[in-house]
Each structure stands twice: as structure tokens, then as C-alpha cells.
Image 1 (tube, rainbow, N blue to C red):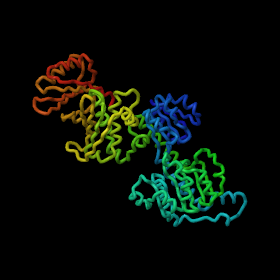
Image 2 (image 1 turned 45 degrees about the vertical axis):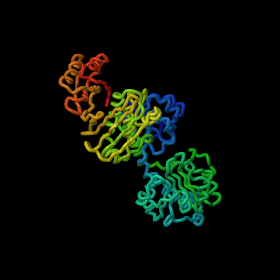
Image 3 (image 1 turned 90 degrees about the horizontal axis):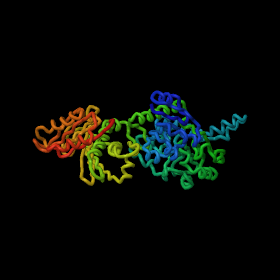
Image 4 (image 1 turned 60 degrees about the horizontal axis):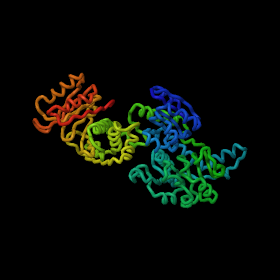
Length: 528
């Protein structure tokens, strides 16, 4: 059984799910040296935001195959180091979506009606109704920066408050935003028009301090800001300056650049509402993110594609349903090409025909490259690091898409170019099995179910099949299947033989020396 370390507190339901399929150690609150000392023992690691999965941790994690983040943000994980090491990083982006959206609305309402200050005043024995005059959110303009899962849920809720919705997100279409009742604007336009602004973008180099002194100065005077996403999205000093000058009418923060926060002047400001990173802190959200993260981790450890792998191309569920049957096809095509090609690899052209060509095929490309490189690479090769390894090797990668396919509903073909020439393989999926259907110009139908496959380029004449079979039988090599593709009667042909046993070099030489044989190659596929 795989061994998994849970390094941060997660919902008990997620831990139990992990324990159903793996050996699980729950060790929370570890210091970096403690984590470094034990991480080499584990195949999987589950964290929240507290544990930092640094490059040092990745380097020390000799067995690690997956890091699961029980939540959406992965800025505490070194994605580049994980990708280079072939370690999948998965998250749980949907489990806390509603919780974060509801907390955003709670902070916006608390900010608009001075709820925390009024609460504390009354608790202190005061009765100062006039001191806490608020504003309504009805008919106010809400600027939403980031229209992903949480931002979209905030938009839906804000509509029920009769707010005017404007948004900034360069990665969504105007039609998508319009369906949610959001008018897309540039960031500068949004800042000038909004009465409330809420942030829901991921933390990247491009979004770090997206609200700084310049942006605060562009806001409508008296605008109120809410941040339930990532503390580093704002320059906290710029917020404090904006509050002091009156440019900002109020700020509500659930996240901070440093947690626990160090900017106590900002926290103590009378126009600031704060909560200690509670965006996902609901019983429902903690249960859902724990289960979602556990499911993703177990999928990777079981050799299955995980939908929420953040250091691999995202595939929407409906697209995944179309492409998933072709992942093993792509992998076996890549593996066979490595065994059949001779000479120095120069480049590979991957072609997609039919229904699969209508979708984003980056995961299929990664599967072909993983199959191609796995037999010739020391260390782990998978969908995560295969494109990186291919680029590091200087392999030129070309993709072609054709939405029509004559012979099959969908087909993947790959041509590897080497210093010795080219070879092409094509495959498809039928009855939930990968089928190799073409080798260069030869059409055939092979289901790669055996660990070894013999490819015999031969003259199609009586006795060719029997001669090879006789040699195999003499050396106690069991034949599972045989398929022949030919271009014309008694012409050149490709014989493919499935074998249960390896073929020693002397037997390969014996087959090669047959008069009717042009060339023979052995492919060891291993487990498929």
C-alpha cells in the first residue's frame, strides 16, 4: 500500500478516505527540518496552507508522487520543482467555493453597516446608534476582480442584492460574463466606477500587489475593498495610506501577506474589518475539500488522471470524458515509437483526427511524450514532467488537428523523426481498449495486451509466419497473437506478434537471418 503523510489538519472524512486505500500518518505542525527528515518515506503528501512544500522538500522526497492541497491556493508549493521531479500537485478547488463566496458577502455587509464596531460598542455597554451610520449595497456598483469559481458565485449572490456588477478578468469571454450579469471592463475602468471591489484572482507574478498605491488612487473616493483570496494581491501599506487619506472608505480582509499578520496598524484601523483566514472555515467546506483532495491524491497514486492537477493542463469534466479513453492509446503509441525508432531523436509530430481534435489535446500530447521518454529516461516520467523533459532534450514537437476522420471516429498518430529517418504509428480506442491500427503505411488492428511485441518487416510469401513461429516455439517463447498488414499480395508486409516471454538476442538474430525478413524489432511494453 502507498504511504501518505497528512501534514496539516484536514477534515476527518478525508483522512478516513485516504486510510481506505493507503497507510496514513497524520503529523501536523511539523517544523521544516522535521518535514525534511521524514518526507522520503512517503508516496503522497497532503497539506493546507500552513506547510511549505519547498524545493528542498521536493528534493528530499525520493518516493513522492503527489502533493494534495486541501483547498484551492497552491502558492505554498514549489510548482516548478514538483513539475521537474514529475510530482503531481492536485488541489480541491470546488469544495470551499460557496464558503468563500458567502464569507465575501458577509464581510461586504459587515463593512457597509459597521457591524463589528457596533457589536463591540454595545458589548462595552455603550448605545451609540448615530456613530455607526452605514450604507446600503442596493444599487451600488460591485467590481469583481477574477470571475473564476468564487468570483462567479459572488456575482450570483450580489445580483440578489440588486447591485450593478462589473468585472475584470482577461481570461473569460464577454459572453460568459454577460450570462452572469457582469459587464467586463479593464482594471482601470473598474477601479474608477466601483463602490465596492472584491478580489478573487489567483496569486501569480502578474497579480501580486495588483492593488497598490497607484490603483488605490484610481478608485472612486470612498470605495470599499474586500479580499478573501490572497493577502499578497494587495499592498497593505497602500491600503493603510488610502484609509488615512479617505480615498478608501473601508477595507475588509480575511487574508494577509504574512499570517499571522504583522501590519498591526492596518488591523487596528477603525475602518478595517478583519477575520483570521476564515474563507473556507465552514463545516461543510472542510468536509468537502478534505474529501476532494483525498480523491485526487488517491487517483494519482492509482495511476489514474486526476482532474484537478494544477501543474498539468486543466481538462473540464465534459472534455475529460471524451479524451480519457485515448490517454492509454497515446501512451502506448509513444512507447512503441521509442522501441521501433533508430538513431538520434530530432522531432515528433502528433496528429489528432476526429472528435478528439475538437478539444484541447495538451494532455494527450503529454501522454505520447511520457510513453516516448519512459523507456529511455532514468527516474520518474509522467504526464506532469514529460513535456519538460522533452523540451530539455531539445525535441521539436509539432501538433496537427483535423476534425474529420475517415476510418475511425477519433485517431491519434505520431511520427518520430530521427537521424535515420521517420516512423509513424497510429492508434484509436475501441471497446475501452487501445488499438494500434497503423504502422507507417500498413493498416492492421493490434490490442497491446502482452508485455512483448515483435515487429517483423518481411516479404509476404508462404512460410514467413511459420518460420518465425517455429523459431519461437523452439525457444519456448509463447505467442499470444499475430497480425499482418500488407500493401499488396505477396508484397512487403508488417507482421506483429504478441509474446508472453522475452526474446533473447541470439533468437532475435536467428529471426533476422531468415531469408524473407528485412528487419525485426522487439518492444517491451511492460504494464499497460
